[in-house]
Amino acid sequence: MARIHVQGTEVDITSYPGETMLDALKRTGNAIRVGCRRGGCAICKVEVVEGTYEYTRPIADKVLTEEEIAKGTCLTCRAIPTSDMVVSLAGHHERVNTLMTFFQQHAQNKAV
Image (cartoon, rainbow, N blue to C red; front, side, top):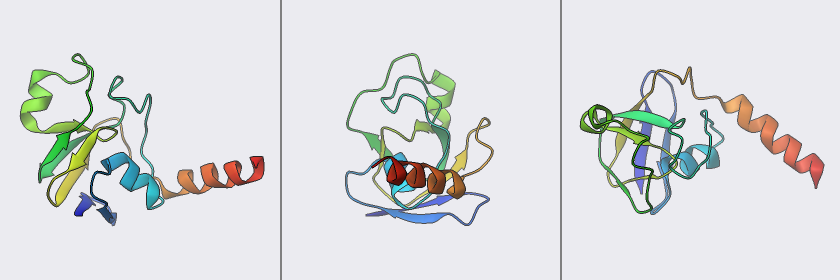
């Protein structure tokens, strides 16, 4: 298990072994902007300030530039923490949104 802290927020969660950063955020009632959830669109990227991660499933070759990879940018939909982490939301993420997750869960419960 690894701790994930989102810099500049109070979000501090624990991921399960083998769980992606995105799944850990979602499971704990947090949400960030996402797209394909398959490593192909880069909407879910964050900057890793501290810590390490691995990809156990492929990501598209063109979604991260060499510069982004060098500075530690990763895709939360595919990145699995291998240590405690501190991440910074990439420029297009305004914040981690706990309310969005609440509304999504409420809508799913009504549909059932």
